[in-house]
Length: 257
Image (cartoon, rainbow, N blue to C red; front, side):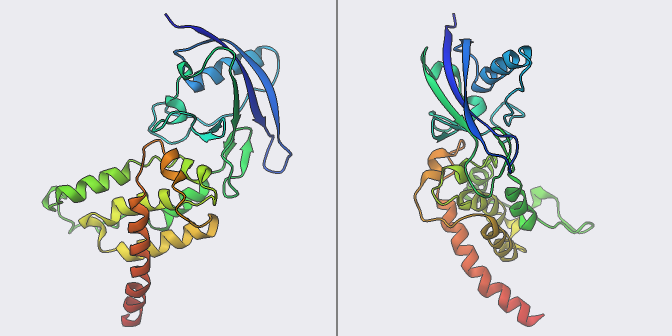
């Protein structure tokens, strides 16, 4: 049988990016220990609504650790105390009766607060739009299964594609850098045969877009620790290599055009 927890929550409340935020204290009573962290917030919100108060806005969607929509700082850690876990996958059995939990939004200049725990993560979308795609001219493209992909390459691409774009790496980084996110999105395309025609154009465009919004990587390693999919830092090395090469390759191609 599940146990019932009585918790004290210190939650960041903020009307919008321009307003001054503050922590407010709420009592979360009778929380089943088999509830997820987001279900616990649902229960608290139901109580607030019944009392005529504004509910706490928090990011969520699929609640299956796939979409990357969820994500808050819990006691100073992105996604909370459990490694390799998104906020929606964290369960209340990780806490004890009487605990106090501090909940706040991602803290990064590139992620302004929309309301309460919800932040604007559109700069991550801008990086994808800059080059996170593969052009496929219609009419002459071969079937996908006609292109042989070595197992090592396929495995590496799949590891990179596991990134759900939640932004925890940015929130955990002391520099608010997005190298882990960008390198994962870059490498899952740049490593595949289908991604080679635009490889260096993609590398330059995505990295330069990233640098417009985010800080620089100085190899603290907090990004991998916070990542719910445990994306390895190796991909940052691949990103740096392709970006340096892109400057020479793209300049050479431009001179020939």
